[in-house]
Length: 391
Ligand SMILES: Cc1ncc(COP(=O)(O)O)c(C=O)c1O
Image (cartoon, rainbow, N blue to C red; front, side, top):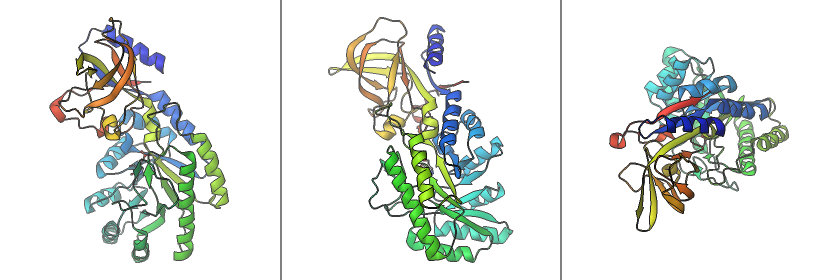
């Protein structure tokens, strides 16, 4: 990739066009990564892509042949996925689903709805009773996680708006028994994101298996599917130490055997770990200045295009593509900022550089997930970056 990207950047630099910024997506790398993920998963596991990580159509098209389906977390995402006609199942989750959202999901004949509250369950039961339509559902559960190390971002194991409290499970199952149009498929768990530890993630999945077994015997039910969510993290600090997917899958295979889960479908709905690696955000250096003893490089663009560093409060990994001008900053550190009039528009603090000049490109890696689509794009009404697909 680096060669193709470097060629593209050199061509752009020689084109004589005004200062430039762009998202660059490496589609073959995305396909290869998804294939790798799928290939290592044990036989009874499925890989869905959580479109919230990046719903760009070209990325979705690239992923479609390699994933088992797509997860939508809003009616908007659901409509967007539906328009693509991939012929792959769509599953619908997320808190706060309105009656209209649920009606849309029924109309689109989604493969499964993840019910997040008793209110949602009642809304859906009413709709199905009214139309006579059947719908497969899973109950998203917010379970306790004692003894399991937390990650940077937790959606479960504590008070959150996500999923059902286990104390409501009895009521939910009674409602389900009274709603013959709703077909219970199993439990959905997505308790944390940014998981960087294989061991901790295996512990989390062990907990999911154990509690599923416990509830099955307590409530005389059987789960065909266990949705273990997404949550595999991307290491933005030590980019060479990424989550070892092959090792995780090997451990998962053993867990499946130990817990006698071979006849269940184990469903993943991963976002960040699928699409982060294929994306780059490139900013051209348009100003270099010193302030109170520190260098600042102002790039064309900023966190209104690429909010990931601000959202994560981290220094985002970046490298410099030199474009031939004599360096203005030499063997120093530089703060990389954007064009917004807020000190929060900082993408990397104190980056060591050997040489940096106006016209150089700052290339942010790991920018394919939760990047452009989570950014406050209209703030200051700057133009959008270009989008380039390498294929
Ligand atoms: C219910 C659910 N599933 C899947 C995901 C995808 O998570 P990740 O991108 O960490 O894999 C999220 C992320 O917020 C989520 O809330």
